[in-house]
Length: 337
Image: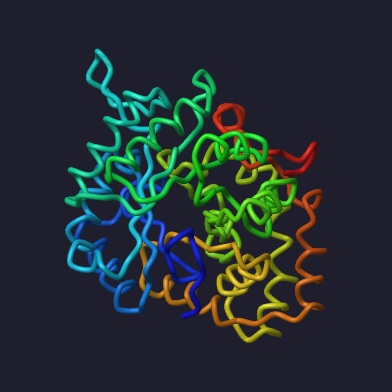
């Protein structure tokens, strides 16, 4: 598989986001299935693995750590802090965004313990806590790097201007944000700013949370614990309108000789040498389709057709509901996206 640069690391152009194994899309698979998928990714040569303190409220790091430990010298291990599960007075664990230096230090040390490693290769601020100047959060992360607890720093879901401010405080190696055919906010500024600053762009949800793979014909089947359920694009009003985009996309996939998923991954990788695709899955077959996307070569005409089909104004519904939008700092399209 082709490789690309994330700072000092050479990584496969398609990595594995491990969130699905413990979190977010309904009932997660059992631990054994999760370990089998990780082993399959290693066998296929994947060298970029991404987890976070938030995923499963620590369970994901506990799952992936032992599987990846024997391979630490040939993989790049990423995790995130600043958004984690915190138990309230009622004993219920809730998601909390907290970018204070002391919290980030505690998050990092907890992640190191759960992962069973002395150092995290790439450590992200999962969400910018807007009550804390970005310089304070990144400054503390820089101190963690100086102490040898992490090797490189990243940010997630921030704007081009916030990325620039953070980069002045301490060099940022990667920006991880959503980017796909139906989520093109990166093109409003962050993609170009990453190229300008020499920052890798790690595109999470390159399959549009499964939509672009064609595996969800009826969004009404989503369970209450599925993070997609409250997202406007998956609503009863908007989802049927979005589904109409898949038939012309399927024709382009047939022309390219690949699956819908591989086509979506290929499109992301064609957006610049600084772009790395980070899909997540629980199925070996789906992982193989995702990895095939790195081998698909698209002509300029095919890229133009995909760009035209998935213009932001053609997408029904925003990426997040109101709460989700308040939690991110990314540029947003005035309408559609």
